[in-house]
Image (cartoon, rainbow, N blue to C red; front, top):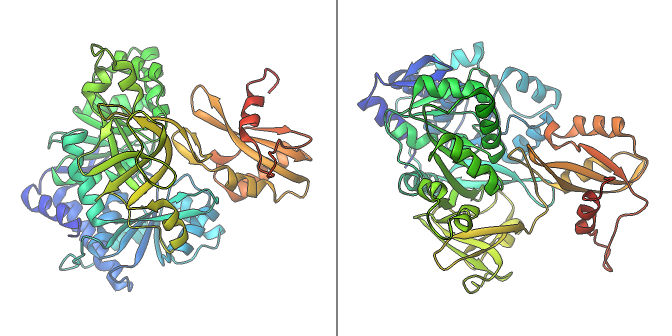
Length: 503
């Protein structure tokens, strides 16, 4: 089933319900939301978009994002959401790999695509061309899609440094949405979901169920995350749900304490996207009350592996409440979760291994990348790359990552990608990138460099090739990188160097 039907049904049953907001201003009820999406669908068909084609969205958080989103689906195409933080060249690579001939882009991001000589037609949204699309002759019917048809092509960096396209089907999204109620939080018509985190990721992927229950969708006027603005919007709308990375939760607590705010109006804060330290979530619950729910997922199983309920997050009476709070919760309703060895064989309870998951929210594979698919889907299990253990009650605790991914401010940085850019400098002979603990962002990117170290030149090189948040915050010169007998760089030794006072 095409999930555009959910918007259509809500528009029929609750046409006058306020739907889309920019700040406190309502810009569309559900009838208008649906009409605009259908007009965009008709416009896309007139441009030659066919069922199964990929259409990208490279936009900041604005109401037009959701209009384009459902217009693409109604036309029978798959959405390719691109993180608005990415460099134009990175976005251009995704467009090329996905074979996307059309992209909706925010004005400044459209300019970045032009500079990168990206493929395809670029429609600036909001803007006159998108306004014309929204007033086009609407399509007469939603294009039918099968459960296993591609709905969302999500790009996530891999260990090679090149982004991989995760094929997310309509079945996966339907199952994920229906699990949200029993496993995380049951949305209600009086709720409002505020998009403070990028809509290309966890914040946006939960829009469908809120559409189905005719809840309100609020894009902050700032276009992103500002704690003071968020508190004002929560107080104005009441019964608010948001998605937040752990660093966002930490920042919310800091600002609330400093300003004497209590988060009035916040009903549910779903946190995911990185490690949450116990001290931070305890402080947040003390500040805001029992409003927090943790979700563990990844692009390959979007928001769909485990969940830690608000009861577990807020509980202080259970004898093992601290252990449970440190976990990522228990398996969600639609999946099986196990801990396994490298061959995908489950290991006994309490034994460390790789977290594995299987079920209807797991991807069928990577876009046009059979080799990566074969390495990730083993014996029917998705090998997450995250290491941990499961206790006797089914709570899963992550201890470390098998990959060297760095999570900074809720965004993923893969060292190999940064290393390849730094090695473009003729003065750099070797480089290794690791994460260093940071009190606000969780981790920050640090590069150990063998050769000539000119921070200004290396910064400029990074700014020309990758997103700003991936740029190293420090360049540390070394005579040689520590390596084992096989020539592999020992990143554990590099991380040890960072703990020394002079680092």
